[in-house]
Amino acid sequence: MRALKTVFWIVVVAALFAFTYGNDSYITVHIWPGISVDTKPWVLVIVALLIGFVPTSLMLRATRWSMGRRIATLEATLAAQAHALTHAAEQPSTRHDAFDSKD
Image 1: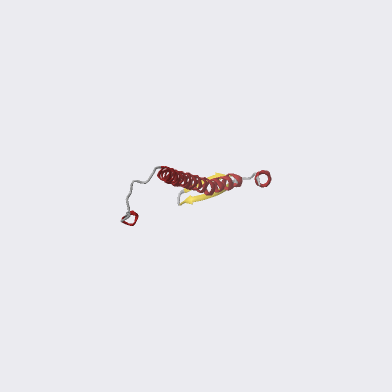
Image 2: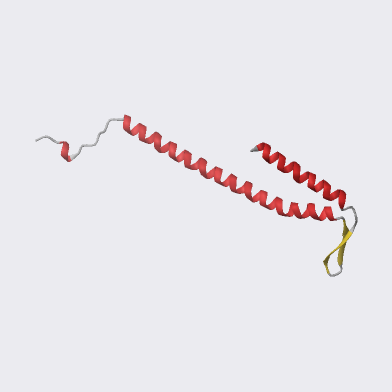
């Protein structure tokens, strides 16, 4: 799986380099009335990719961290319950039931 991921990123980077080499002229981008920026197209593509990638990546990491903490808490609770059950089974019972009395 890691090899497939590496091949994917190599293809993406190669495509970006090819796009950069092929689009070296300047373009004018009008952001708001009165505000325009002269930039190269590859800069816009990389900025758009980062705007989409960074927040998504941060949300994924936060979700994984949160789920990891939740799993750790549940595992600790389960281990404590198992420990309590094994200790309860080892100790003799001091409870006297009404059905155990002999007349």
